[in-house]
Length: 512
Image (cartoon, rainbow, N blue to C red; front, side, top):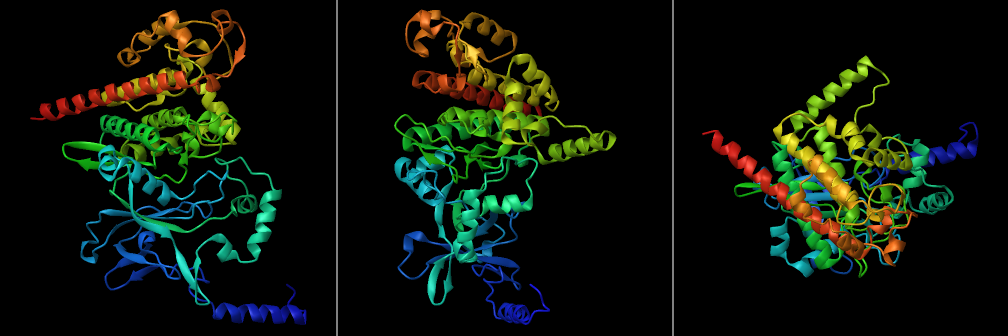
C-alpha cells in the first residue's frame, strides 16, 4: 500500500475505520469463554449436541480457573485444557476436563471420522459407560462445534468462517505446495502457514473423569501400572468397537486415583480411526513425533494396526526412562542437558534424534536404535535413570522391543526393522532372550520349528525359509502373527504390572 497514492490512502483509512467497528470475535476474542473478574474464574460455554435445536446453540456453562494446558505454538490443533466444574462454588474442586481444540477435519477418505465426540459416543454405545470407566477410557459428557452469531445467523467457528473469501486462496496454495516433512527443526513460518491452513473446526468437549499428567507419578512402578491399564483399554476398544487410537504418547495417557492404587486413563481420540474387518487402518501420518511408529514416520503404504500403537508405547517407556518419570526428575534431567550443552555446543542428548529432523531422519534413527540388542542397549537403555524401579522399566523396554520386533514364536521373516533374508533362527533367539533378561514367562515356550512355520507366511516350508528379502513390518500384519504378538504383549504387560504392584506393596510395608 502506497500512502502517497490517493486511492491507497482511502483504502487505508477505510481499514482503520472498519477496525474500530469490529466485534470482539472479529478482533480475535472468543465470546464463549468469558472471564469473571469478581470471582476470578472463566465461564466456559460448552456446546451440548444432545440438546441442540435448529438455529440455536444449546450450551452448558462450566467454571474454571486458568488453563491447565495451553498450546505451545500458533498453528495446529492449538489445544487448551481447563479443569472445570458445573457448580461455580466448586470451581476449586473440578471433576471435568474441558478440551478446547481446532482439529483438522479434512478426511483422508470418506470413511475417516474426524469428530472425537462422535467417536467417544460410538465407543460408549458399543461397550457401555460402566465398562469405559472400568477400563479407564475418557468419556464425553457434553460437546460439539463452537458457534457464533453472524448477521443474525448461527455460524460454525472454523477457519473458513474466520478467513472468509481468503480461505479459498489458501486452499489453492496448500494444494500446490508440497508438505514440509520437518517437525523437529521447524520449517519457516511461511511454509508452516501454507501447510496448516486447512479446514479446522473449533470444538469443545466436556470430558470425564478428570485425570492428572504422567509426571505427577512418584515412581516407575506406578508408570508401569498405568501403561498396562491403558494398553488393556486400548485392546478392548479395538476388539469391541473397532477404533484404533493411533496417538499413544506421554500427553495422551493420564492418571486417575481409584482406591488403593493409581490407574491409567486413555484420552485424546482426535486421531482415532475406524478399522476394517481385519482391524487394519489406512496408511496415514498421525501421532506425536517422538512416539510415532517407523511406518507412520515413513508414510509407508503398509496399513496401520495395533502393533504401531504398541511400538509407540515402547517409545513412551524409553522416553520417560531417559528423561525421568516425575516432574522433579524431568527438571533435574533438563538442567543436566543444559549444562552439557553449555560445555559442548555440539552435544546431542540421548533420544534427541527421535524429535529432531525430517520424518525420514527420525524413522532412520529409530530403526538404527532398535536394530539389535547391543545397539538398543548402547543407544537407549544405558541412558535410563538410576535405581531399582528404573531397572524394572529397562527390563520392560527390552521385553517390549523383543516381543514386538524379534518374537521367537514367529519365523524370521517377521523379525527385525530392516528388510531381511528369510532364514530360521528361533532357537538362537530363545537363547538370546534368556541372556538379555527378557521375561520369558510372558513369551511362553514358542520354540518348536513346527509351531513357527504355521504362524507366519504361506507356501511350502522351503519357500518360507528361502533366502529372500522381506519387509518384517508387512509380515507382522498377517492375522496370525499380529494376534500372536499382541497376545504376548498383553501377557507381558500383565506380568510387569503384577511385579510393579508387588514392589510397591513391599515398599509400603517396609516403611512401618
